[in-house]
Length: 428
Image (cartoon, rainbow, N blue to C red; front, side, top):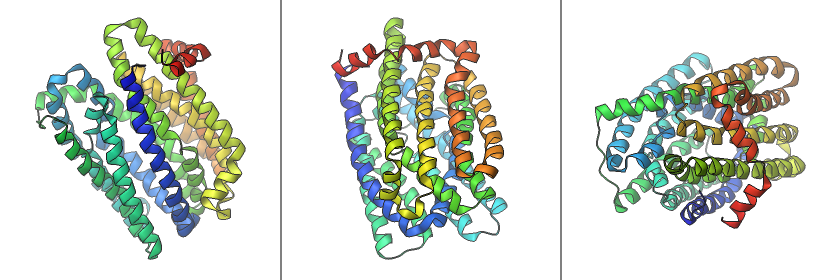
């Protein structure tokens, strides 16, 4: 995990994401103020609905592709081609599912229906960017990062044009799909120029891939339930404005999430390789990764808790003031959600995917029940507390309850050793 190529790989991702974050802050600030809490709530409601269907559209393949490419480099073209065909078919079906859902539950809200339908097309364009996992496996994420940054800049310019010309919410809904489409095109061009093999579909390989990824479908769906249910329930139980406040808080809490994703994405190939060659190195690398994630997330949570009023006022304006106290709660659940991201790397390496379904089913059930109980009397604060408890329970407590994954918690506790963090900082 500590090889120079891993560090350079993470640096590319983080560097490009920092630029995206700065641009995103400006665009989000202007867009949220322009749309207002109500319309901003509609946009985020649509995003939450799409998030429910995305795990099915992706068939869990995004969780296993890096490992498969690292383990079977001679089948890179087959793995990518087969994954794209399978995910494309599933994503198309999910677009139809979103249309049915929106027409059923929002039948008297034509704007909400149209926004949901437009957002749903992003599931198809997301499939086309699966080549990113080839770059991750090769520790060449700079190409992935450059593609994402280029697309983000172009889409941000388009959003600024929409703001300048006073376009409706419908036009903003199109930007989500447009961004993924541009990323897919850019990445495919770079993939071919970097010697990426031709895509090939292999039915037998498809079955093998699905056997490994199927556990992640239900697992990811359960994760989505306790990550997105709060927004959907807030809209249905209180209204678009409350959802707008809550979404603003959630988006602020996730401002630095790209750092944690970059670290995990860059560490993943090296961890899988270590697991094949050295048990001791594998476990130490897992604990080091835990240490980096734990201490970085704690710093993030403390800073955002203290400066929440300034952050909300600066990014969203005084109209979103009710989001401040929600942000001070929500930012702490992101800390525990990142622990789950690291745990999933360990679970795949140890081939214990079958337990993910149970872990996330318990988490999803807990979150839904808590939202039903806490939202009516506490509003957005109830939703925030429900999510905080769910993330802590799912990513920490359940690890002690389920014996087959208990050792992962041992590695997580070892990550608290500051000496491991210092080793990472010193590049040892």
